[in-house]
Length: 341
Image (cartoon, rainbow, N blue to C red; front, side):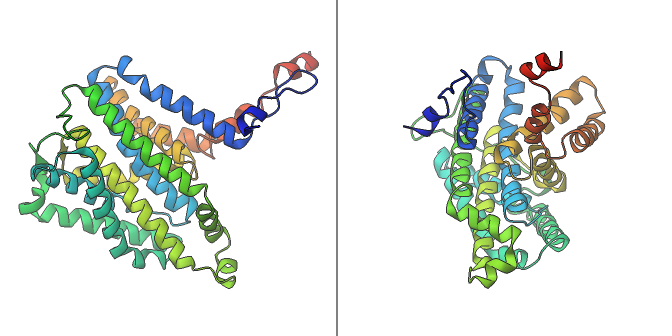
């Protein structure tokens, strides 16, 4: 009998048996896909473009979650491969390579090669030192992009390149809903691959490296190889996020890949729960909604609203959004209320 069907079997008293963690994750993912898929019928074009940008920022936050929550490498430098993927997509489109899967593959490859180059300097450090090294990598990348005016457009960025075609022969999308649909498809595929890896034996080895590195080394495990794999994989995920960001916004500049975005990605990972990849996407959505939508209602209060969001999350949900389940589970159920009364 399939696991999901066993979870729905009923006990003798008529109550359903508790769902397994895998069943809960599957149900949550299906609910998330259904909610995101319905947005084109619920939002206007501007709000839909913000949702597409939130998906790109969510993938960036997911790459931070992989490194910080799973590999134990806190990072402020994922904007570096994010920038590599973004500029690779913009330059590819300007050169005539406008097909979406080609752009995503090129962005992921370029970001992976970049992560392979800088990874050895990152994986040998731990704790705050990793945070400082990754911050330096991100700032050096940002400075280099700003100075290479002939290639990146400098501080003015790149604009005016052809729009992305979702598939071969599909042509550029004429409506915002089509752009959002492309972004949602790429984001879903990237998250699915990430979750499959994290919940595989390789992901368990990565968890062991974070929690018991000395024991893993004593057992003969190549810890540095595991961390390098995680770093390059997270870099590829950030590169895909950069490609999506360019597709959605049709513009890229150093301001889009600077320290502010790195801080937002880390904040989204904290809000979503440091080990929840899907939670990181929710965290990014909250940040984008607070910064770009609520600040439109209260102009000039964007940073203050983000500060309030962070403080409320830290105090009320120290485990992030996944901790909301534990908070709700402490509330008395209907049966308990009847016994109390």
